[in-house]
Length: 319
Length: 302
Figure 1 (spheres, one colour):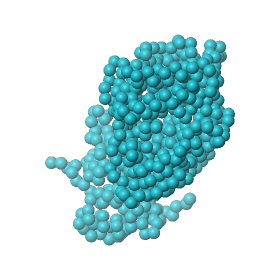
Figure 2 (cartoon, chains in turn blue, purple; figure 1 turned 90 degrees about the vertical axis):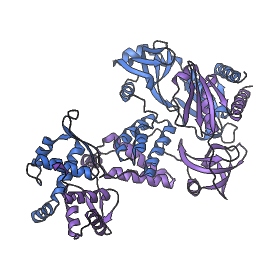
Figure 3 (spheres, chains in turn blue, purple; figure 1 turned 90 degrees about the horizontal axis):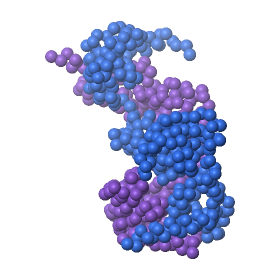
Figure 4 (cartoon, one colour; figure 1 turned 180 degrees about the vertical axis):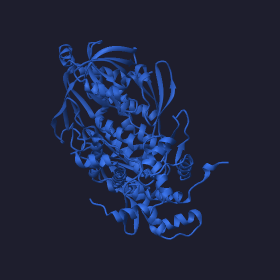
């Protein structure tokens, strides 16, 4: 688009010079902290200011910004002699209702167990938390997520190491800190916790490990063939069938390795589900959580274990 | 002597105008009032146009609609990458499917504010790259048809009588409740209310509420409901407290936890997961409920 030189000249002449200077310096500080000398140097190159500013002018402008509500820390050795803008009032903020809606939205995604969406939402919220109406909402946007204690670098490494051999340091609630090899297969979110499902070499079994308990990834082996030859993840899995009714049936969402095999709203249990069980302990926990809405159909051995668990639970209350 | 205390008045007037413009649209007269109140002097309208012009020269998009000026963009520049934009589009798509008027309105206005703060690079990225919304494994289907009625109930604070049928096989039950709030769980709208009969917080799937009517009485203050339970061994060492929980006692291989205002049905299901590692201590009604439930579950396999 061509500009009209006359109009342009008029636009640039009819301005508040002190106001322009203040906002110009504010914009520089929004970008990054700067020393007085850096601000003078940048201002000299600006076509409107177009002159070297004195040290006093910079000081006066900083004071003007402070008077208008900016919080700017003084240049010190700690800040490399830079002015650091902590906050400013020239920004729109979410209302409390808007911030609450964002928090409720995240909770609805948590209920779905979609951890990948949650990672992205947390990342987005960390960028928009500056628009929170107050510190309380800012902290809620930043930290009210079940993934708050997750080391995202570890999560990323596990996610890219699927079906590869890795060595991890794990903080086990039973044995304390221990190192072992695993081959990760997939990640799930269960009861607001993130788990990696893997073949565990130390215990020679399929494990689901809480990702927030993985302290570090010690080594990664990128050759898929090495892992493929040693991986026994599939050896420990088995099929199971269960039925659901009530609210559990209404709110059921298919998970990894499971499918609805029969659906009839006139049956006592309207949903029949087949699942490839990777870990017996985790599966029994899940069946228990459905309460009387669930009936485990097969395998028989697991049914016996479930009955024994229920007896143990009942025994807890007979003291 | 502090020479640094000199505050250029013209600059301050401009900053005050900008401060308010970032929050709401303003007419020239309103802006004039602000600057006049600031230093008790009278000014001509031209001074406002000069200030608006200064903002434009600095790259702020000052727009006018129905005599009021507003800012199309802000000072903060949000630099989003493709991933951020993709999840933002997902939120927009999800919001479009909601029938919850308030939540929808507030989510859309939040998204609008975010868009206004996009940096030039972010705008360019959104325009030039074919960015698609984050895609979930399952299509977004939200069960919230009757939600508007319950949204109004929550705003009006009248007591309610509702008939609830948890599923097609269950008996219909009548509850007298105080409406509290609506949430979404697994894409279902859930009505949270305080049940006067049991003095408990209860969650109702809105799609299963068969009838509802407002009562003349105003909702009275709700009493907190507390459940205390003990967890043992490994679970006690690895347990993370929920938002509504406090740790009452912690021993070498046990922990006692107090849970406040959780729907008993939901809490039961969660505690059942912990099998024999968990024991409900208080109140007796909840302890009995747990024992009965375990017995009923056992009967399924007899």
